[in-house]
Length: 181
Ligand SMILES: [Fe+2]
Image (cartoon, rainbow, N blue to C red; front, side):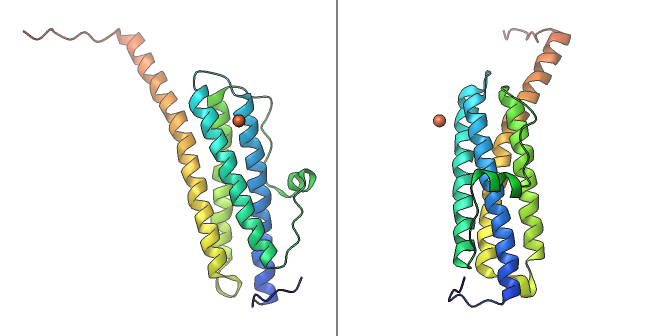
């Protein structure tokens, strides 16, 4: 499609290719986050239920941002469920997982892989393939994705610390302190 945005054909195609991939991955991540939001069970329910919903919203907004930039550059967005499944490198969950922390781990893995792909794209889109607007857009998405990875990891890490503390306590018995005189 013709647009008034001045850009070489090579640069435009390279930008669109990355933006379409980010759109597909973000939509897939949004669907997975909703799936986790709906199916999770366990003691972490309240916090993770809300966090998965936030991640679904972030990734949906990121898809919107990337798709609209691609559209501005003349792309036609194929974003029905079948096309997303075909084009997104983000895989499905390995089964019907309900455990909240396991779901947090699966989501963290996928968001981290998505972040790696964006960072790789930022490295490739340099020089005559680069575009300052596209670079800022991708960097903003990367920042948010990595923040969400950190949020998920903090839940998982907290659980690991708790398990270790419980193990130590059961091995040594509860620590008794001398009463202060
Ligand atoms: Fe909900």
